[in-house]
Image 1 (cartoon, rainbow, N blue to C red):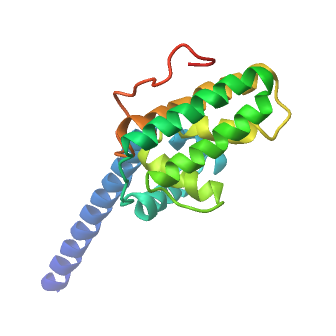
Image 2 (cartoon, rainbow, N blue to C red):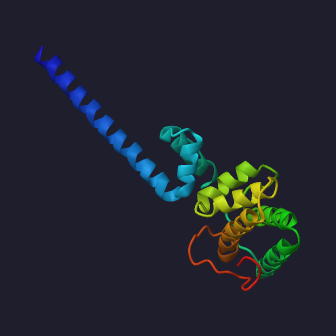
Length: 193
């Protein structure tokens, strides 16, 4: 009988220890995801109606699917080509904000693709992948994408272009290396820079 009590006690202690470790790991995972994704974490939690566990499963899945993307550096020629395209898109804003945002949206898709992010027409898959590596700037890309097709004021479109520029600069500055600091504004003194 004493052996059975000892076994039950050992199993209970092991179960409690496992529960505490697992709970601590989940809590840390949430903090790690919040730190990694920043405002994107809050956006996903809100989209899941406040269900943090569901949001964290989605974000964890993004990291598993896209965390190991082989990001390709850009050539100097490609950097210059993209910088010129962005300058043209910004200049076009004065004449046609809609066409400017269409060009910025296409440009961000092309640039992200050349840096090694998912190819194809699936905007959500592309933004999910980009959010793993450029979480602080992904909202700007979403704003460009939606502002071009929805009825928005000129000011809202201008703000979307400015926010989209942050992802553009991040991709261009590091050539896809995934760093989110030290960004440079390659086209100064034009439009929305």
